[in-house]
Image (cartoon, rainbow, N blue to C red):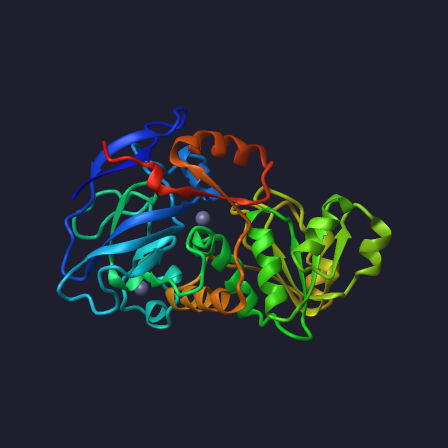
Length: 349
Ligand SMILES: [Zn+2]
Ligand SMILES: [Zn+2]
């Protein structure tokens, strides 16, 4: 089907209007009219070919909320008019042990990305959510629970579940001491969710500058990593540290902050870590772990939890025509809120 989006044609060029064909819907597919799409740091990396894997033209966007306007004859989960959401995946093998466990992000065949992946039947590159329509198999469309403000909820699909999954995996809850490093799009979600789960929450930041922000999000305290005395006093103080810093950084100073059997989960940076000593790991059975988004079941659990607890990301709504400005701001790391594109600003002609 013919539709329109905002695409980039090379790593150097701005995103611009682009007419293209979505695949023709198959019997198990829904067609969505996209209403909102969040702007994730990965979108920027992908658009600029920072990972060296981008093929152009490409349309980023994997925090997608929309309305079902067509449902194939085999679709049982959704009907026309339903508000649904799509995150970072649009397909997986559905048969391997990981898919059967509901952890499609770790599919043995590789998950199929909302952008970056290729359609398994037509072999065409998947185009993301900065567009008017999306065709997706029903299993990868999540149900938007009533009561969740759909104009703000989109970032839950990537930033939200990326922090929710490690919080659930390492059982954040009452009596657990959770620290969050970094207070960007991922960090603010990690804090809000950990607080709502009942954990005791500390934000770790370079200085005290973001203290008010941290407390406003519900954190109990802020620990300034530049304050040596405070860092020493905090030793053995956490069961779980969620590290959301998106650039290469040294995690050595954080390891002694973990209690025995504590875990630091990396969710921001993907790539080499600077050299670090195994000493705090060995002397304390501490773990360095990683975590990738979350499965479909976990994502649905998150959406339902946020609706129940009235949790939403801090967002700033923009028109699609402002996407290049938003990318610039994201690159500077200036914004703490998440941009969400109001897709009604994208006109069909
Ligand atoms: Zn993302
Ligand atoms: Zn699989």
